[in-house]
Picture 1 (cartoon, rainbow, N blue to C red):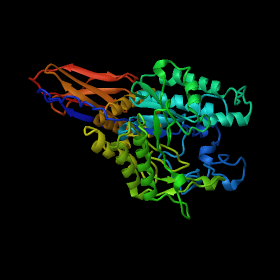
Picture 2: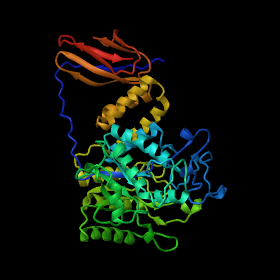
Picture 3: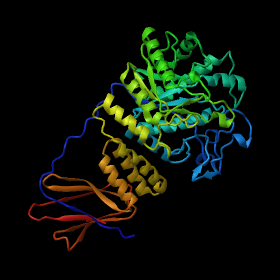
Picture 4: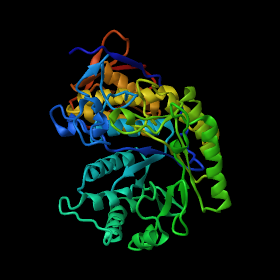
Length: 498
């Protein structure tokens, strides 16, 4: 394939460089609640999809097609999924590295500091082990992106395992429930808490709990945490209310139990009353700290898959997210929790969708800049780079040289070298090599060659823009191509790559 040349003019005068931008840490972290449970043909093979895309079996164990969404069937170009909303990249698998890269890039670009994963423990029981494998995979990519990580433990799994009986050699009873939960916490300590990127508050690992649903006493949690190292006693937050003294505080959540009317709807007044009362309780009871949640909407699919709807919370053209997020960023909470990244079943999604595009992440960016971090440098137009990156990773993931260039683009995006990353992406998209990071120190001219690098690249030089000679050829390689040459101000030279 013949490439169009890319021309640069080397002007031999000193270059002026600005100092790199210093990232100022936000006064409190903005975390996003993440669901790791999606399975597709990527991991299941064939045309197989799991329950969180089909809805089949989430509430009623049956095969009634009335309650079943089939992603293998498309309507108006979109696969049928158990959601009112459709992901920008289509239904995906939470184990797919391209998806995980896409997600963490969006988080970084969107002004999110890390993830709180909905976690069922490590047991090979129902889909708990599958979810944990996907949690570990996500953790690898949050590290690469410089994001924090935390867990929200579902202790309802204990009751599920007691009720479900022995499976895969796992037997949980009321008599050994605490011992079993202790083993789960020891696993979390080894695999998560001790990692430098795990979120800490006052030097304690942050752990959330939906409920509690099974262990409802202080003594139970004291016993569970007693097996942990003294440095890993968690900053522990439960939903809505706090048990003392082992629990640090609580986090709020869309209060759909307060929805009323027909159809069942949570009004803005009911929402505000709930949020005010939650913060008032935290103050009156002198909680050490609390987590404040923000959410864009709530519209579940439960009635359509054999369950009962919890009701609707109106998106209000983005005002629901704007108001709840501004409140969370400006109140006395220790941590902001976005609810959620990707709970498609409940519709609380800030991940880009066909329905809302990048709007919600744009709101997060703007409010972060206004309320927490005036120096935050990413903007809404930057968000599309993650989607471009995802498409190229899917297209060229098995081409070593371009895959290596995509790795460099990932690093540039998360390190705020947005202009360079955009140029590299454009080069791959247009099948052209590109020149970037040009520098000159008065003696040596240096530039990097990237973009489309799946074939050899020639660097050519001319003094008159008419006659060109090849001065160096770079073979196809996963290594970064760096061109450097001594220069003299006596002769003006031009360089191009092709």
